[in-house]
Length: 269
Image 1 (cartoon, rainbow, N blue to C red):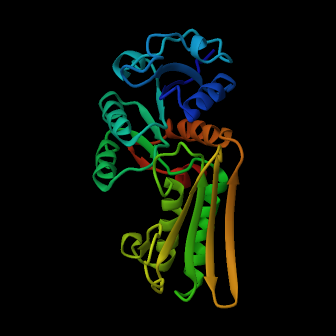
Image 2 (cartoon, one colour; image 1 turned 60 degrees about the vertical axis):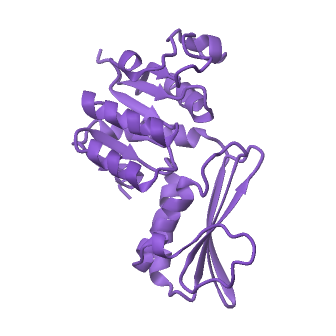
C-alpha cells in the first residue's frame, strides 16, 4: 500500500498548530511526520501526547526543521513572519512543499518568500477557508462595478491574542477591492483611525479592527454611498476550516511545479 504524504507542523502549541495536529490525525489523506516549536519553548523535548491530551502520537517535539522535518513531504506553518522566512529557506533548500498561513509580512519578507518559491512549491494565503476566498472574489467584482462614490470599509474581528492588525484576511480583501478598482492599496488605504483624522478621502479603502474574547474570525466588506450600503461578510465559528483548507492546499501543491501560489489557485476560483 502506498504510504501517505508526511506533514510537518510549525508551532504545534498554538491554536492553529493544535488544530492542524488534530485534523491531520483524523485525515485519511496525510499523516503527521514531525512537529516543532521555537527554541526554549517548554514543550520542546516532550512527546506530543504528553502536551496534547487528545493526541496519542509519541512524536517528540523538536526545535529545528533539520532534525524534525527530514522525512516530511509537506510543511504547514501558521507561526510568525520571521519563522516563516526560515521555513521558506529550509523548504527551498530541501525541496519540501510549504503551506504558509502566517500573516503580517512586510514587503521585504514577501520578496524573500517569492525568491524561495523559485526552487520549491510555496502556497501563501492570508486565509485558507473556501468561504473567505469566495468573499475575496466577490469583493473584487463588486468593487469593479461601483464607482468611488461608494466608500469601501473593511471590518474585522478576532480573539484578544491576535498580534497583527489589520488581519491578513482584511488586507487580502483590501487588495481585492483595490484590484477591482484598478488602484494600488498602499496609496488608497485609510488605516484604523483615532483622534481628529479629518473627513474621509473619496475612493479610499478603510479598515476597522476589533480584538476581544475568543472570536475566531469575522470579516465584512462594506460599500457605502448616499442612500444605500452593500455588505459582504464571512463569519468563522471553528478553526477547523483553516486546517481543512491547509491540508487541501498541501495535497494540491504536491502536483505542482515550483512557484508561489495562493488559495485562489488551489480552489481554481
